Every structure is written in C-alpha cells, then in structure tokens.
Image (cartoon, rainbow, N blue to C red; front, side, top):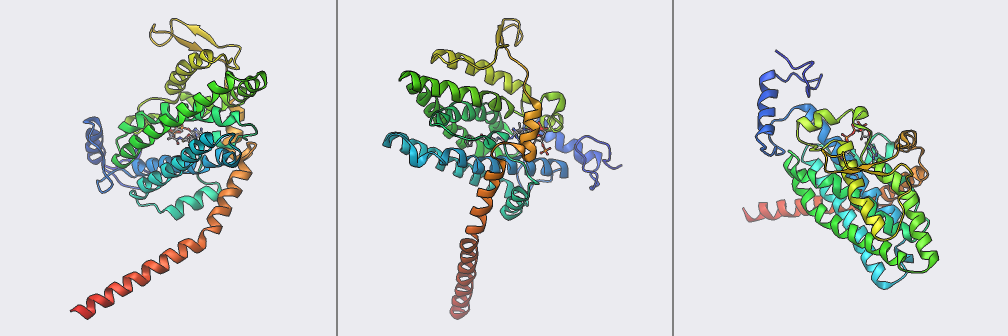
Length: 335
Ligand code: FAQ
C-alpha cells in the first residue's frame, strides 16, 4: 500500500504506511532525526523550505540595520550594531549549513532567493529612515524572532535544533540592546521620544505579521506541528509576543499603535492576555509577494553581492582543486 493521500506523503514517492508510521513514532518518542536517517520526502522538503527561508531572512535581515553602521551616534552603539549585524550573518551561515545536510546546495538556495522562488521574512522589506528604527528592530524584530525560535531549539530535525540554541542566545543579546536603545531615547529630549514612538508605530504591525498568517490560513502548520518541526501555531506565538511586549512598551512610556488593544482576563485559559486589533493581511501578502517598500532594493543588494562575490567562489574552488592535485602528487611520490 502506498502513501498517496496520507498526511505528509509526497505524491511523487511511494512511501509505505509502515514507513510513515515508523517515522511518526520516532518523532512522537522525541527522537532527533539526523541527516542520514530515512525520512519522508515531505519532511525533507518542508525543512529545506523553512530552513532555507530562515537562512535568507537572516542574511537579507543584515541590510536594514547595516544601513546604520556608519551613522551610529556613538562608538559604543557602533560596536554593538556591528556585532549584531555580524551575528545575523553567522546565523545565516549555520542555517545554510543545516539545510545543506538535507542535500540542497547553497548555490541552489541562493538562486531560488534571487529568482523570487524562495521567500524571506516580510519584515525586512520595510525601510529604516531613523536611528530609532535600530532600537525598534532589536526590541521587536529580534523579540519576535526569539519567541518563534526558542521552540525551534526542540525541532525534531537535529541540525536545525542545535543551530537554534546559539542563535537564540545571540538574539537575546540583540533584543536587549534594542530595548536599551529605545529606553535611552525615551529618557532623552522630546524629539528623541517622538523618534522612538514613530519607530514603534511603523514596526509594530509588521512585527506581528512576522509570525505568519492566521492559523486558519497557514497551509504548512498542521503537518509541521505533527512532525514537531513547529511546536506552537503562528497565532499562539503571536499572542505570546503581544503579551510579553505590551508591558515593555508601557514601562518606557511608549504607546502601542493599536486602539483595540485591551487586557482580557479570560484569555490564555484564564491567565489573562491582550486582545488586539485586526492585522492588515492584504499588506502582509503584498509584501510577501514582492510589493513591499523595500523588496526590490533588498533583492538588488543580494544579487549584487552574489555577482560581486563570484570571483571569490571561483578562486576558492580553483585553490581547493590545486591543493587536491598537489596532495595527490605528493602521495604518489611517497609511494
Ligand atoms: N514572511 O503555512 P505558513 C529574524 C509564508 S529571522 C514571508 O504559516 P510556515 C532574525 C510561508 O513561508 C526571521 N513569508 O508557513 C533577525 C508560507 O509560504 P510557502 C525569519 C511568510 O513555514 C532579526 C506561507 O506564508 N524567521 O528575524 C511569512 O509553517 C533581526 C504560509 O505560511 C524564520 O524564518 C513571513 N513573515 O510558518 C535577523 C523562523 N510567514 O513557503 C536580522 C523559521 C509565513 O508555503 C535582524 N520559520 N510566510 O510558499 C518559521 O518558524 C515558519 O516558517 C514561519 C511560517 C512561522 C515563519
């Protein structure tokens, strides 16, 4: 009996019910799946898609903040921002490596990004016109990333889960530097407070969109949760983020730009939580499909970097080939 019609089955493969059931049993026992283990094609594809998109997001995500490195107001701020942007580059590299263990190459993934086939997070398609945007990104975007990525440390696929441990530690530092930057602005002049509020106004809703569509519209969630790639749904994580972040805004005297935001003591099984206003899903899908304010610039910057770096990749390959030949020749001579 073949798997067509079974959840998780790839229609191009013939994976028996026994195979899929045994795989699911490993997942249910919380065993980590490693690159050389047998796995359903659908599981592999889902991971290549998610990890690849995650890697692209980290790399594209360097651009909005990188824009401010040369203009950071003090040496201390410049050092922190430089370190943060460099960390994001590192995250992209761990993630590309984790995806490569599944049989896809970095070149393939990059070509899919540049051709528009692979997605990256919607959040990085917004501009950073003010210094406060750097605070807002650290506080809100890294804050949202942590909420989403801490559960990924328990993802069923070993290399992804392990990469996430270090990523989350670093994101935690990023979140704090962003919040501290916002706090400093709110303790400054009226103009600085206004700058912080303006940044919160612009980044709040896009940060909520980072968690992905409503659960009812999330095509991948059910299967990804069954495979324990995702541990919480998009809406669950979005709610946790709102509940954690609203008091942080209040603490530094900023107003979350949502007139419908209201504490609801019944929420979260009676523990309480915030009701919040409707997300503009038309905007979300427009940005995901390439129509955001900075989509063109981001892809143009990545394309330029990829093309400018072609000679480095070619030189590295030529060097590796020469070394291999030299080592082979030395081995033959020694025999
Ligand atoms: N943007 O069925 P679902 C960071 C797509 S890293 C664009 O719910 P899924 C660090 C989704 O791909 C930020 N597209 O999808 C940093 C799918 O399309 P597909 C990135 C989105 O995968 C901070 C379709 O919509 N984080 O911030 C978005 O189950 C500061 C249906 O959605 C990760 O990638 C979106 N926001 O759940 C760096 C974390 N949301 O592929 C620099 C790992 C959804 O079927 C500076 N990823 N889509 O054509 C995940 O946890 C998941 O992939 C979700 C989406 C939760 C993002």
